[in-house]
Image (cartoon, rainbow, N blue to C red; front, top):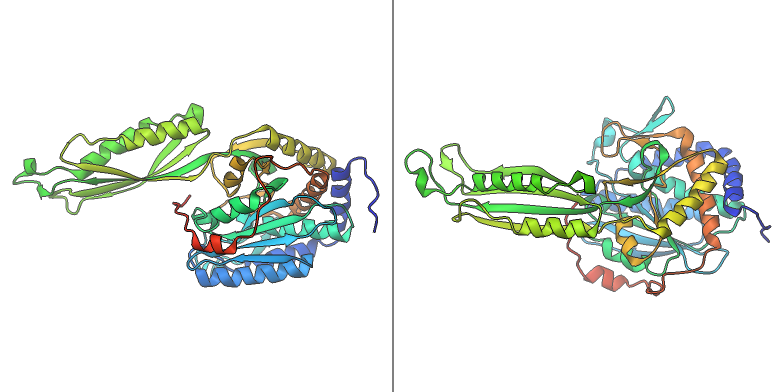
Length: 421
């Protein structure tokens, strides 16, 4: 079927998709309910495998012909790339979604999928199962309406919530050469889109001291707990909120008994920065920490889990396209930076335009009040459909990267060491 020309291709497609999706709203909700009612905790390999099998079967039912490239992993959720050929040629648009959640097995027993007062709740509904449902239905709407879209490369990861140790390499390989990357993570407050995210690091500070009796001969001891206390205060001093730099000692352990000078202690540090210079400053300072007692040995391990997702002209251009489409749909939103990271952080350094937060509107990520606003489900799906049509006319790719190849053996055999976010 020949597609007629549109003066505003993205907006016109979004409006047509909205009407088509509105007639199928209950089916979208049913799909979301069925997905949420399949538990996919990041630390349960069996449930992740079952969840991925379900998701792939459902995508096949909804989107038809596709080429599936599996990247299995022995301990983490597998990464799977689903290539959906488009009616128009050119490089694909990469769509990122993760199917793992932070919720442990058994959560559904006390917290099943429910809809109350226009809010749908359940483990993972906001972060980010609704986002994937919206993405798949946006593609389905475009194809059913014979609207233009580029080839789609849908990447499903099963370890995003633990730092993407198995999927990072695959994401970077598959992103190279794509015309854009759309991330189906939930929106920011009020439905705003995410055009920048902080870089994230996890550092562990370990102190090894000398044990001694705290009453009889304390002078023979060298307290690891005292050393860690000084280190934690030094960590707090490295924060610079004006530059977006935060450090948090999220866990401190040490000592054995109150009457023993502590021989071991540790602190676990979360770091968030908005630019590379701050990342270098903080890391240098952490690795230069020294204890007040030279008899204590202080070691700093860990590093950067996700690079900075810095705001740039390409992402701003992508946001403006989305904003125009949103205006046509009557859903205003702004561009914002957030402190959390996503798999989109891995793509930005490759020179590919990235727009994040295109998933559900709601609240409560990782919290027991997690929910989505059900009346936004059709709107956000139509927004994504319109944006994909807009991108169908854009064929330029980053000059320094060639199209990605499916290197299953490499992804499987080369380990990537990361720490969780």
